[in-house]
Each structure stands twice: as C-alpha cells, then as structure tokens.
Image (cartoon, rainbow over all chains, first blue to last red; front, top):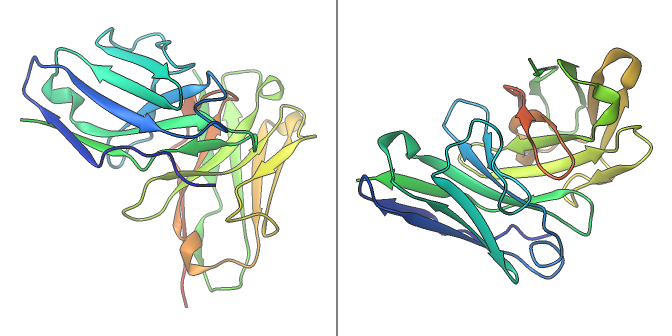
Length: 110
Length: 116
C-alpha cells in the first residue's frame, strides 16, 4: 500500500486558479470513482471539499472543483483567496477496502 | 449536528496497549461505515482501519494489521480501536471519521504517544 502522489507545494496569487494533482494506480484512483479531497488547517479536523471525484458537499464553495483522468485526479481552486491557504489531501477508496491518502500539498497564497 | 468525540489516547511504552473510543451523535450511526485515520507528527494522513455499518466486515492498513482491532457497538453509537504491540511509529493524532466513500465528518482526534 503506497500513498497517492501529490506535489509537496503549490502557490498562486489571489484571484488566480491552481490545480493540485493526485496520482495513484489502477487499484485505487483508476478503479474507483471514489476520490475525495480534504482541506486541513493545522490544529483543526480535516474538512471534506470534494467527494466522488467531482461532487461538492453542501456549503463548500463553487471555487473548488474536482476531476479525474485515468489514474490521476485533480483539485482546482479558482479565484484563489487568502482563506484557501492550507494543506490539501486527496484520498481514494482502494481494492483493500480502506482509503489511501496522498502525501498532502501545501497551498500558499502569495 | 453530527459530533464525533474521541477518547482514550495517552502516553504508552513500546509494546504496550491502548483502546481508543469514539462516541457519535447527530446521525444514524448503525447505517454508516466508520474509520480511524491517523496523522503522525509532521506527516500526512493515513487510514488505519475501517468497519462496515454492522461491524461484520473490518479492514486494516498493512502497517497495523495483526496489531490493531476495530470494533463498534451500534447500541451505544460507539466505535473502538484496540491497539496492541504499539511501536514508536504509531505515535499520532487518531481521528474517528464517518463515511464509506469519503470522510464527511471528522472528530477532533485523540493523541497517542508511544515512548519509553
């Protein structure tokens, strides 16, 4: 069981769009449409921002969008805001019936 | 309002045991899969175990299989994680997480420190 691969950091200026990639295998991301994304501010519980590849939970901004192609999923944050600065983790259901997480991406708003 | 409240963490010596508990409220507990996810200091998230709604099916990460046991008491809206043969690398904040496809609600976590 190896973690999904995410870039360690991504940055952008306010108003810009950024995209975080999440690469897995044919046993997780490629097999299931159960990719989710979490925003995690240090000291707080992670918050679900995308589930089932591209669905937004109630209350999550439309600026967050998810997609998937083959073994790679992506999270795009448009109209970047200071409050978006956080750690982001992708996750996928796996053939082992538990979630596999990515290593996390630190998003910095310049 | 959904609430997940973990307890049972603490300082334990290598080789020791701990039992984590999570009490759920605000949703029909018996209808949902539940999970334990941990975050070691300075590291990312790791799902260590999952249980089906009835508890009849349980799943483990390779890193804890054979040492940890997940269980649930649906009559008490409670999830448990029995952790045996603890190692230094098990030191982490352990979260109780609701959900099957994705974790839509998370507790605040309970800290487990394995050290002599």
